[in-house]
Image (cartoon, rainbow, N blue to C red; front, side):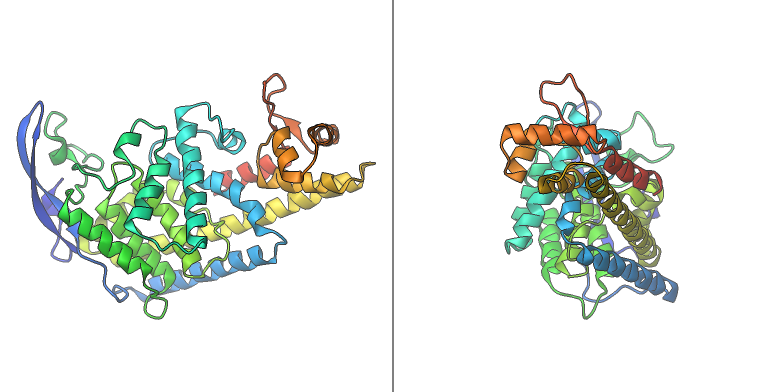
Length: 402
């Protein structure tokens, strides 16, 4: 890490670190430890406050649309899978969105899909715990990261704050044969007291209702920076950190239903995203970062709202197709709802969710396939999975437009 890039306004301190590389020998360097977050908004330009205001308006429009839906939770899984695909791609784990949307959550077929679907499991677990009244805490945060890393090569090193030094990225022009810590783009806090204290302080800060002093969008930007800069886990920090943004917006009552997909916008601008985070550490540039972050939330809210409206339109279109047919069973309309909420599913899922016998569920699925409402992913598979092509089109079109 280039120590000369840190200016006097840097909101943290450089602390000495040392270790031994098994090949190159002993090294010494410094790591950046951010100061605890303050109780007031950083100094921001009026234009940044306008961007924050626009973000709040977009989030309010998304929340209003969600509240008007008969069952907004129907849209949680498809939007979560879309978020999982983008937030994982930001960290270098990629699978096509269509594959993510239609994957079997119980039997993902690739290591990439395991990690991506773990995000959905982690998010649902976190939303459930918070809804049950569990406070955000270091143990809960560690538990969430452990869920994220299940069945991956780093599972054994997960579920707790890291106990080793990590480095982030690589500086352009760095000596490829030198110590990795010297070549790193950024070196976060060392393990031990500095990291443990930093994470505890951050959790305490997040648990305080600051709506009267700090706008929730600005607060989300502040703690997101702090979390990513501390980099508390061996892996998964970006995914956990972006999940906490949505959780925070729900906790602060900005959103009633956590359907916001924040990562597609940041994924499309990943270099700028990382640069803004770094400039807070090196120059104390909260203004540029908060403005970028708020603009991301604004566009993410608009995109998610458009996706929500598109899915509701598809839901109505498919039900109208059923009404125009000779099929009169109410369960056919319930199956459309299931197909919107679950981008792919089995007959057993239909049997369980709709309370039908297996034979009736199988016949109903077949009837909707004949109507063109549903299709089968692989007709020769032992466990056939079905999907609504129009739902998949709506979800993938929303992503390509981001």
